[in-house]
Amino acid sequence: MVILSLDNATVNCGYALFEDGKLLASGVLKAPAGKLVDKRLELIRDGILGLIARYKVEHIVFEDTMLVQKGHNNLQTFKKLCWLQGMIAAICFEQDIDYTIYLPSEWRSKIGFLKGQSQKREVQKQKAIEFVQNTYSKDVTDDEAEAICIGHTYCQNV
View 1 (cartoon, rainbow, N blue to C red):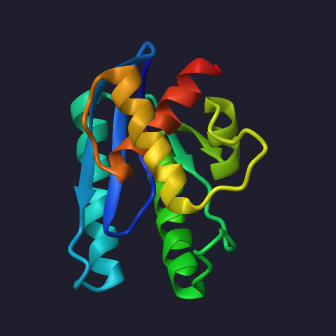
View 2: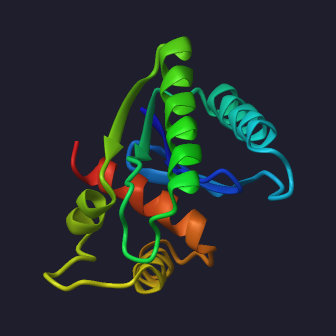
């Protein structure tokens, strides 16, 4: 089964593709920050649809949108991420693809990042990068790393 995992973002949306638990490809869907959010969402949608077509994606895993995260509680950003989450769900409905949504704390806990301690966002992102370097021997950005970690978590827990 081919799985697409996403680290939802309206500018740099990390993605990873897995087949039977093995990492096939990963990267970042980029939408210029200066563009209006609807144009950025369109670019991200087109990128996701392209990945679905190219890799014959059968399941999508993505992160739930949270209003309050330490150091990240901007209501406008939250709303844009909710639009993105809805768009991803709509793609799944339209393409007849099953999906799973993880809370950020859920996938981080399952992968072992949250060992009873509160961590800043930068520390969590660095842990994702290090996990990918150690597990997949791949140099990645934080967006790509988190997408890989989300997909890895799903593959290890199905």
